[in-house]
Length: 56
Length: 236
Length: 244
Image 1 (cartoon, each protein chain N blue to C red):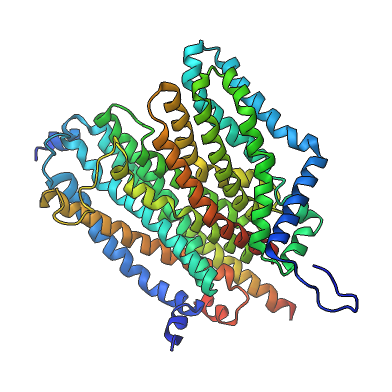
Image 2 (spheres, chains in turn purple, green, yellow):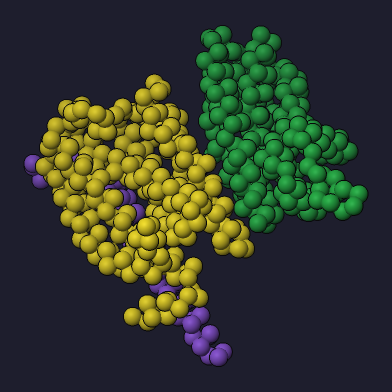
């Protein structure tokens, strides 16, 4: 594979690279969103626990 | 559903009688509010007028757009009338009573949905020649147009029953109802408009009509159970 | 007799197991996706007809498959929860929905970018594209319905029912290229017998597909733990589990 040909993707570069870029973005979003979701759930649970403990 | 004279357990009427009772009640209630009956029809007429006005097209182009415009308008006006399927009964507690009555809730749902279709979908079918004329649909295509609308609106009533069962009592339920029902109704739109389109252009519409009929049969057999399940989820 | 199955479905068990499985899913996904991308971009030979543009297949097809797989998982998990009242099913369905929706969107966008050079248009109202778009709307409907209820249990059950109703769309998407004259390519891989694609092109594709599924597994584990926490906040086992 020639290095020039690789990046130009036989002329289709402006379609191929955005596809992979968007795919990477979607994968990254999934990771970020899932971790944020879990962290928020954990925080809410800890807070609920703390409130319940302080009430007793 | 009568209580015995000495306070015995209530006696349930037969299935057929229960069905007839609910059907007649629904129809009677609908006709008591003629304005509610007419609103979706008027909406249908107005929406179909909007397209030719907004696009100011020639007659030949109008004919090409006509099936799509007709069907989108039918879809939207059906959505409008779906709100009333369960809402008023849910609001005053009748729905719960019906669910607790001991009669098959599925049967009641079938009666209600059929009544709903009779006053909304069937009415749409009867009005459609007017709209067809306004949209320059040739009269030769009217039979297919009305047949496809009849099958389509019946399917839609059932899809709507599922959606209505899920969203009754929710805040902004009608927005959710549309969000739920419209994606499910898209295949319907494609085949319904397709059938009318073929009838207009003269190629055989029978295939599309058969597909529509198949969709209708599938929905009519499965949707009652889904709609009943939806109501049980909402009511419990 | 079914105790092992119910143990499988118990929230504390799932919570622990999901945590343990996540790094495995991540590692395997990284390997398979990594290989797939590198081999697909650099080592697979260019297509006879499509040239290098065909390489979009390595993200488009796996995401489309995942969109269908995730929806089916969501509907089946919801059905299990509805029918056998195994609550973890609702958690799995709720966790899966946003993942599946994002991959449906990815499939549509990459498909659109692939369509432009191949068919000359970014979009066509052909059966497969249309039904995949409907799938996206179905996802959105399910994700909108669940939080609309005051009682979260009711919301779960309503969303489960809706996702089951929408399941009929999945075979339509898959078979749309068989039943109708479609612009979209027919089945080249998912058919019985030899796939009609040479190995050097096929292996990266299979690897990407497996990789996306493994990725889904990883993200599911993370989200599932969050869902379990949200649903089981009051339970006693949560206290210990969350402190760590």
